[in-house]
Image (tube, rainbow, N blue to C red; front, side, top):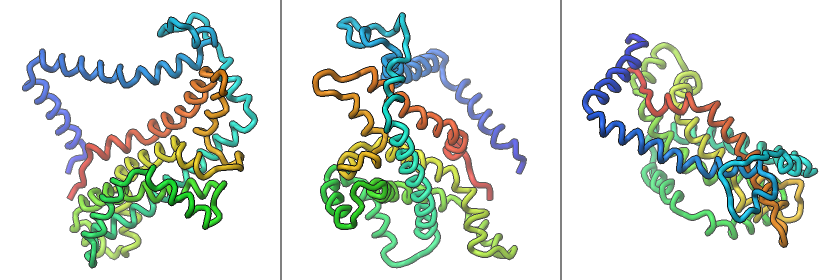
Length: 294
């Protein structure tokens, strides 16, 4: 099959939609899209704007959607915190470990439930769905006692293990569809050509389901990076093991919260997430629109 065929097909589909949809409706849809994007992006804009505003403008009774005197004072206070760098590194370790471990385990588990038939396979898949319906807040206290019994309180492992456990059901269920989309004829052809099961798994199947791994990794990364509940519950006394969301508590003073510092720290927290999206967006988009060739 010509490699340019999928691109030509998508181009033909776009041209067909443009010809078939009346121009007024198309303009209305585009305007609605821009409006929704603006509404979604406005809180992010206000956060970044407040991070650059001087304290007087932030506390003003008449807030304005601009600033005439931008300043980096809030960022200086953020980076002036002695433990901020440690918090940032701890968040990277937790999020990176969760992404790598959950992706590896989910890929192997999804391959097992999609390619092999065994007893209670359907029951296992249903349990994955049920696990998604349990609220995290309901399990925080039992997890606290479990981490205490395992001696993991005040360690990064107390944050890594629960996030891996909570991200696996979604990741396995999603990757199962990607694995099933790979034709079994491709696997049989690989075996006929002399490829072992391990070689097929890592050199053929893994690249084909990589877009699905990227999609699940985005979910795992955001969940671990923005976590505050587990960090507050399991990191009790050793602040050297705290993560970035807990760093925001430094700026919430009882008498006078430092909103400039809060917004600046939140802006710094958002940057790695944006970088992660930029790095994986091509794989993510290709996963949504790609197909496996038979």
